[in-house]
Image 1 (cartoon, helix red, strand yellow):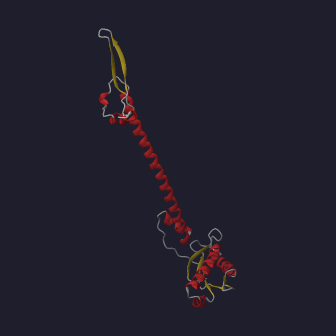
Image 2: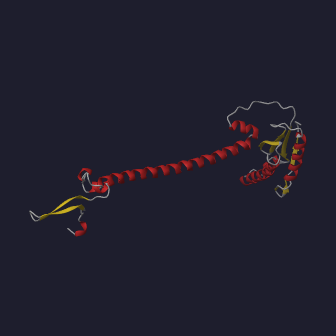
Image 3: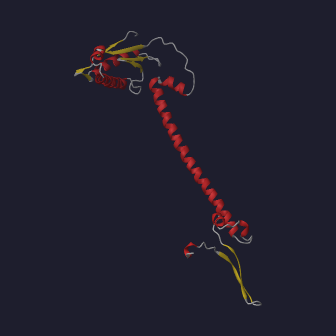
Length: 231
């Protein structure tokens, strides 16, 4: 058998010379590093003398390795929990943005804190309905897929400009209710009462007419028609 394939067993101990018999006695026991080394050689912890510190070293090594694995697993678990928390926080922010985009801030705050929102009566408020002049004609002339996408892009551009005007940070006394087709609905005086609700809606209507002129469809500016049947 080649020498490099022999599994050597290290021994340690004490050599004593006995004059009476003229021999040298080697009192020894296996030298191992850890429990895996002990098991690989087919030995047991009982094969190591009680007075030898190797027993304690082997057991301490196993305890250290177990503690290290536990610590590493806890760190991995902590990282996963932190990542999960960040993902939940991102989803919560998305949910909040969606909630505040479809409901008034005061109502959204109550719902977010799981509090009921009772119905209220308002003595005065002004509603605005906006429509595109000739929208039905636009739709009839652009019934194919390309034409439909043109209309969608036009509505998106127009409503984006209108949304800038009804942004709560810009106009805190105006609330955008909804959009259906080419109709855009906004209100002032609801849900927060406002003494200048009619003035706010009148200014909004004029601003919307000005903004719509910058939106072009079929090489012509879009004409916006605003009216207020519920002032």
